[in-house]
Every structure is written in structure tokens, then in C-alpha cells.
Length: 623
Image (cartoon, rainbow, N blue to C red; front, side, top):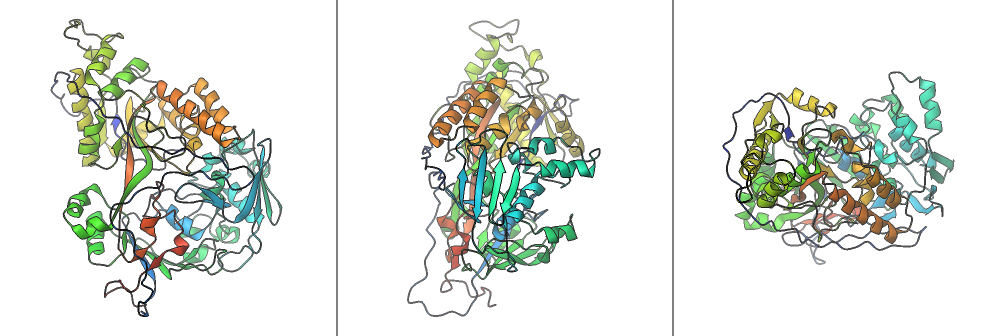
């Protein structure tokens, strides 16, 4: 089972001894919540077997568009270098183990999958020139480009992609964060169930041989499924198909990726140098099938904290600041230059207060509804998220295929209705009257708010929610500091996972399958919170197996509506990306994507990005 790829400071509500006294109770009050109004454009279908496009609305950026070089500009003998400042050094640069926010950007620059997804979510050919889904939806065949090569010039064949997919499914590969996307491939479920501590090597090898992935010749790869599948082209664009070089992996299975020579990819760039914790430098891959990129170097420069990175950006030491935080926004608002260089646009991430359906009182849908009605999302975004993102009561965020951002979702903020929901469904206090409805606080006593010691942001979030719910329900909600190790251990068992936890989900690929079946199906991620609904599973499966794109989208929308009707969580908000880009950097601000977890324009055509050398600062690199 996979944990969310981006887990944004989960707030735990643990039923454990208290560390702080109760917050003072306050009477409920009424506030009208404003639902989100961001429109979502529908996807349009393209006949198979040609490339299937799934368009999304283009994200907007704040500030002036990137400039193009002047045709009369004088020749400037400087290299075209894009210096990207970051504050998170990647833990791993391995195609089958990297994650959004942690190394995946480097992997995507140095490797390419069978297919690609652009900044708008459109599918396109990648290492495979074309692909074909069988009429029964049981097989998907990829036909590789002629003369496909690795960075060192050696030929790349379908067997390299077969190796990549089998490595993504191999239970012996530690930290395989995305193996779950292979669940519908024939034989993948048997591998997922294997315990490497007890399984014999020959048993694992036999299971890998039975995986529905086969190179039938040097140019052809066939993927076979357990049942008809209509979404898998998008999986073919993820890192599970990025072809690490088996020879180099075998030389150092655990750490082959930590040295530049370990990488022999097929993406637009190749890694030149790695200075752990400080800098990683990429240079063009001259054997890339699209041709040599325009940039002569991409330098990833890592800083110890966000203020230091912002200082470096203002001193022209970097050209793109990836990690803009809410703390930076006051300074940016007061600086016209930074305002013009800011790229701010929606992110494909949703935050939610997820209920543990296996624990009281949230095994009761009425309680889940009441807490959703009690959740002040507007102030949550403003005070806790610091205006980063927008309040949202649905699951699939705006701009993602299948999203229904113009429709109401789970119950929105309505304090009076929250109290009424509890009072009218068995949670009324003895002195409750129609004129003065009161909640029986004893029946909500298990809802306690915990946070890991040492993280003030966690404390602030827990404190906000404790105050919010105390004000609405007139009951004390207690805040408890927990040792970090104990805090993490709570999530190992559904019996100890808190009644409510703040979770987030960031998409792996822009398709509703990744938002519904991947997260909410029985046995998937939400099962850790005691969530399993067989009726919903039937709806998910019907959508997943629908081969007609228009019909599939309709089925996914129905499935999301049914999911929200169960009130599995108090959906809170969707996120936003914040990046700073110098005006002489050509490209990144023109190709924003909801999936840009690392830096602006990450999912755009990076091989076309450029630097206007007539506008660079005086201390821009000379060599």
C-alpha cells in the first residue's frame, strides 16, 4: 500500500493522554461559506489507437510573460545556463523510487518513458512513436522509435522498458513508491503480496516472468492486463517506464544513482556532476531523439533554508527560485520587480481532514457530516495555509480531467447546521431544546488533536481546528503534543490511526483514475483509515474499464459524486504553486502545469527553454 507522495504535515487527532488543558468553550455562530467557482473544461476524446489527448485549462501566471531574444541583439559569448534554486536535496535519483518533490524532476530530465504528458495533461509520443490499445482493452502495445539511443550512444530496445516495468514491480527493490500504478497489469498483484523475507528467489523470479510485460522484439513492448483497462496510457508516461541502465544498476543496486556515471538515460539531459547536498549539474544529451536542447547547462543549487534561497535569487545567483513560501509573499507584495517575476497557479493537490471510519465517532456518517459543516475552510486557508490555495469541498481539483469544481461537494461550512446535524441524530445534550440546541460533548470526547513535538506549524494547525470545533459545538477539543516517533507509529495500524488526520494527495498522472481508484478503492490508500465501500468499487471499476473516453469521464464523475455522498473526509482546499523566474529565462512561465511539484515549467518542453543573453545580469556565468 502506498502512502501519499506528498504528505503535507499531517495533523493527528489521537485518543491519548492529554498534554494541554481544554480550550474554553464558545457558543456556535453562523457563517455562510462561499463555494469555489473555478471552472473546469471537459476532456475531449480522440479515436484510438492514435495518441489520446486529455486537455486541461491552461494555468495562469502572475507577472509579465517571458521575453524573447531580440533579433538584432549583439552576440554575447556566454553559455545558456539555467540555475534553479531549491531547498530540498533529493534523497534518491532513481526512476522507480523517486517521488514528486524529491528527485522526480531530475529523473524526468534524464530519462523518458514510453509516452509523455505535457503541461496541459495531453498525452504524446515519447520513446514509443505510437501505441495501440486492443479492442477488448486487454493489451496495450507500444512501438518504439527507430534508432533510439541512451546518452552514451548505445541502442535502447523494448527489453530496456520491460526491465524498467519489472523493476518497478519487483518487491526486492526498496522504496518503490509508485508500484501501485501497476495493479491492473497481469501478475502484478501476486508480486505486491510477496514477502521478501519468506519468498524464495526463484519464486520471485517466476512471478516476475509471469508479469504481463513482454518485449516481443527490439521495437515492440506488449502490456497485458487482468481485465479491460482504459487509462493505462497515462501510466506509460510515468517513471515506472523510465529505463534505468540494468548494467549500471547491477554494479551497485542500492546506490547506483548517487554518482553521475550510474545514469545512462534517454532524456533531454544527462547528469554531469553531483555535489551531495550542494549542487547537481545537467548538460544536454546529444543523443536525445528530439535533438540537442538549447540550454547548455541546468544547475540545481540547494540551499539550507528558504530565506537563504530568496536572498540568492535577489542577488542574481540563481535564475529560478523553486521554493517560494508563504513567508516570502509579504516581501513579494511590496516589491514590484518580484511581483512581475512571480508565477502563481493552481496545483494538482487536494488537502482534506480524513476521517477514520473504523473508530468512533466517525463510523457514523452524521458525525462526519457535522464536522464537515463545522470546518471553517475560508479562515483555514487564510490563517493556517496563509492564503496558499483555495477552499474546496470536492476531491478532484480544478483543471484535472473529470473535475466538477462548479458543483457542491461534501457539506460546506455552516455552524448552525453542524450543531443541528448532531442534535437531530443522537448527539443532543440532556438540556438541549429546539430554541437552544446543545451537543452532548461526552460523545465527542475521543476527538483529540495531536501534533509532533517541535513543529510549530503542526501546533498552529491543531490549535486552529481545536478552536474552530470548540466554537461551533460548544465542547472542549484537546491539543496533545506527541513524540515524533510515536506520532509516525500511529499510522501503522487502522486501530491507532487518529479519528481525524490532515492528509493531502498529489496526482501522479492527470487522470481521474489516479484520484479515485488509486486512493479510495478497498485495499488502496484510504483503507488505512478504515474506508472501504464495495458499491463505490463497482463504480470505480466500471469507469476504469471504459474504453471510450467520453463515457469514462461520465462514469468517473458519477463515481466521485457517490464518493462524496459517503462523506469520507472534510475536503478542505486545493493547493497552488509559487515560483520566481527571472525575465531573461525563456520558457518556464509560458508552460505552467498543475503537476509542477519542483519548479515552474517542469512539465513543459524543457528542451526548448532558453536564456536571453542580452538581458542577463553582469555576474551571470561566463563559462
